[in-house]
Image 1 (cartoon, helix red, strand yellow):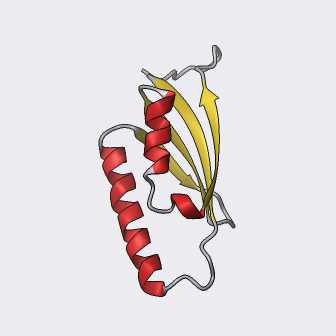
Image 2 (cartoon, rainbow, N blue to C red):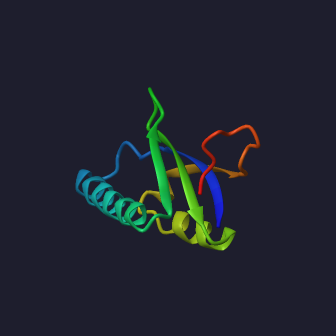
Image 3 (tube, one colour):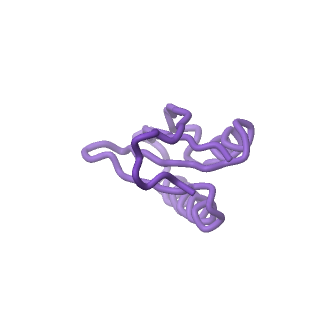
Length: 96
């Protein structure tokens, strides 16, 4: 399994139909929570003061992460930065 830190910055168009916004946000929440239940979306944190999050994914491949990100309902409105992660040798609680 591979771990990635992923920063997602959202920039919704100000003139986007409010009904489209609400539908997109509802689908995003359901999709992300299913991935969390499945264990692929390991952590999600808000970035204070921004419409952004920092998440950790644990997936089988680069292609799987790409598929997950590409299918985010908010993907068209996001800037995404992906950082591959490795266990640090000084970590006293390394991931299993």
